[in-house]
Image (cartoon, rainbow, N blue to C red; front, side, top):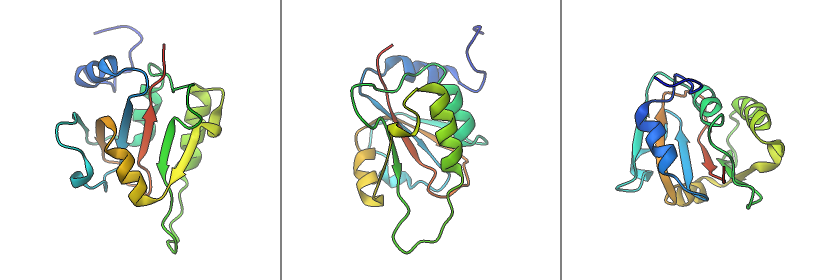
Amino acid sequence: MLKGIPKILSPELLKVLCEMGHGDRLLIADGNFPASEIPKGVPVIRMDGHGICEVMEAILQLYPLDTYVQNPVIMMEVMAGDTVETPIWNEYKKIIASADARGEETIVHVERFNFYKEVQKAYAVICTSEAALYANIMLQKGVV
């Protein structure tokens, strides 16, 4: 047990976060994310029973966002013609703003299939039970 470490962060996840270097990306996937899009050999950490907001809030206490790129936060945009509401995005903005002074300026939304291409660059993937649609989010690590 360590002091100051959010209890939701497992030893396995802490190890991966420590191994990651500047510019490495971490995907926090919702419950609908297709496993076929996760590159072979990429560490997958299961966080079943948890939502993305609580996971991201804990991670951003330890994990700086990259300040050398304009958009260290990548999200999937809503598909054209889809009428899905995305209230979770407002929660993401609050969490990011509490961790990084740039706030929502750090976020870029990319088309679904381009998002999957970006996932191919992920260092690790966290699989959650998040039920919100279009909730996948990728964080690019900065320097401490």
